[in-house]
Structure formats: C-alpha cells, structure tokens
Length: 436
Image (tube, rainbow, N blue to C red):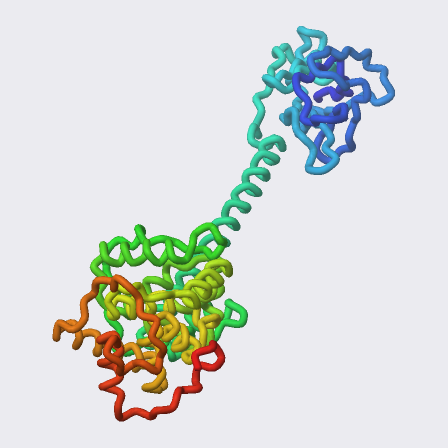
C-alpha cells in the first residue's frame, strides 16, 4: 500500500503582485477544498520560510498515488482571483532523497518548496517541477482585454454618430436639387431626413421654373462657403460664388440657385430651410433674400442715405444715371427698400429743376415710365445734335414756369413738346418727399 501524508509549506517567494494599490492576499487551494491563506506573504521578491507548525498548516493531505489539482492564488476584490500558478500536485513529486521535499517554480510568478515526508517514502524517484497548464488564465490579460473592448466600443459609437450626421446632411442637400422642389419626395428615406429639421416647410423654399437643368459634373470644391457667422460679408460671398460659377461654366439660372444653396452652412443653412414654401423662384429672389438676412444693418443705412441724396451729374448721360440709380436701389434689401412712390421722388429730385418739373407735369405714375421717357428724350436730342453731354458753362436760374422761353434747356423743351397731351396739373403722388 502507498503511504499518505500531510503537505506543508516550507518556503515561498512571489515575484509579482497583481494588485496595484493594496497589499496582496495570497492563499493555497486544492480543487474541492477550502482556501489556506498565507497571512505573512505580503512583499514581492522576499523569501518566507515556515516551520510546518503554523496554525494554517498543513495545506492539504495526499493519499496513495492520487494527485490533486492545486494552485497558489491572489485574491481580487473586483474580478476573479489572480493566479500565480496551477498544477497537478502528486505524491510522486516528493523525493525521499531530499527528505520529502518538492520544489515548484514558475518564471516571474512564484517559487515554493513543499514538504511531505510520508507521501513518497517507498519511491526513490527524484522530485519534479510541474509545467503550468494554463498560461492564458491570467486575469491580468483579462483586464487588458476588457479595456481594449471598451476603447473599441467608444470608437465604433463615435464613427456611427459621424456617419449618421453625414447621411442626414447629404439627404437635406439632396432635397434642394429635387426635380420638383414644390412636391415633397415620396421616398421614405428623404421624408425621414426632412422631418428631422424642426420647423422646416415640407414643400421646401425652392420653386424654380421647370424643367430644371442638370447640375455640372465638375469639381465643386472651389465654391465658397458661407456660415452666417459674420466673418464673411455677403457681397464677398456672392462675388466669389459668381467667379466659381464662371470657372465651372454655369449658364442656367436654376443651376446657379441650387449651387448657391450648397454653399450655405451652419446658420445660413438653418435660415434657408426655414424660409416660406416656394419663397425662391429665381436667382434674383435668392440673392435678395440672402442679402436681406445677412447684410449688416449699417450697410443698409448707408445705402438709404445714398439713394436719398443721389444727384445726376450734368455731364452724365441719362441712360448711365438710370442704370446707376437702379443698381443702388437693388442693393437695398427688399424688407427695407423704399416703396415705389418714394423711389420715384428720389429719381425726380436727382434731376435738374427743369427736367424734374417737366417729368412731374407728365404725371406718368411709375418710376419706370419716368426713366424711359427721360432716356428717350435725351437720346433724341443727342441724335439731332441739340444736346451735348458736356456740362454747361453757367446754370440758368429760370423758374419752372419758363420752360418754353428762349433760354430753355433743349432737354426740357423736348419734354415739354412731347408732354403736350398730358394733364396740366402737378402730380401729388410725391408729397411724402416734398416732390409737389
């Protein structure tokens, strides 16, 4: 029969600690048995020797030739316990030649000597050192794996959010170039993306004349971007946009409008998609709405001051003055632009007293008719040689009632002749600006 005996711990040295903050709690345990704590083992690289008479000895009991699955462990307060080493502890490991001692060593983990004088008393075999069977069971590697999983999860979530936002942005821009922007698209994807923008009109701001022309296939990265943050003046953005359209060879108005929408970002995009349904019908309305929203207030005040004080230079052709006057009017945003009657007054006040009086007598009612008449009369006088563009050497102080006198300006005389069939009363339409 084979002897059985108690296994005691003669010495132990640990080379590392799996705990980073507190002192390690080391214990020995065989499968199916209770933990045997080693209360004195607290420091790394320190050899602890025992007499075999300690209160926690023996570690276990081996019977006959049967082995046990045993190991040396370190308690972990959060995760599963860390393992210094696990191995099969067998009676044959204890060599009688070494007084029943068995040495177990694992590199960078633990070095321990066990004693069992009766475990292998009938055998002359030398003690052996077991090779660890589970090198991948270290909980340290489990912790590293857990951290890597968390990092990967965060990266995946960030990428998912980024792609989601990009798809939403692409869908919204696609809505601006639909074949018919006055009809809400039937595709569920476009419907879902559109409704994500709170308060946006379903039918969209664009109501361009059909059919629409194909957008250019060239590189559109050179188009400027406008964010509505005050860093870029609206006039600068429009000028840069027109240059980019010229480089790309844009010829059609509807293409210009849709490309202009693509240049809007951030605050400007939010403004555009909150415009009333069908608010943009062509490039002029697009530009006017854009300038009305983003032009600084001081620019508008300056434009109003200029148009109210504008004067025609004596040497300036009437056609050029009309163009200059209209350009200045068109620069003023629609929501602050003077009404038509006020514009008519500004135009009349810009003329010489004789021309202004003659135009008032005509009482044509609109600014456009006044401008057309003034240009037509001056063209006729120039072609007949009765009027030169050079400024006169002296200005006449004649009163408005002397329009038919011998010293009357040829332009005024021509106006008087052409207006003989008009009413003789002075128009009262411009009384708001002292035109009567």
